[in-house]
Length: 187
Image: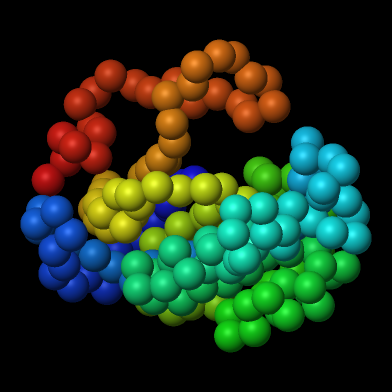
């Protein structure tokens, strides 16, 4: 998951749930929901994508992701492929759905989504890109609020992830620079 910010945007004071004071800007949450989840074969197939499955309870990954973003983003968009639009809108009917012009995996989808937001929203919001198929625990709201403030203040890409336990080329790599510019160090 990552946040990006271009320009200055509109700022307003905000306090995170842990009491830390920060500055916030408008945040557009973009849920990336175009993949088929081929690593979860046979449960996930072309006609039944992983993000639309209900593997942990009665709600799908997609509805859980959208619900997680409610209240911490000002707007929610779902980016998917044209063949999934009906399934996605059946699950989350009150969210704007946009479609990828061409299926090209996560990087180009993120680029398309941020370009769409830049062209659509005049207030230059922070963009929160989040996968549609993750299980997320406590602390997410606080982390997103702090990350949004950092992205707005520094005009930089901010990422949130877990510490890897093994190399995995399917996920790529982020190599942090030791400058002290972590969310915990920027106030």
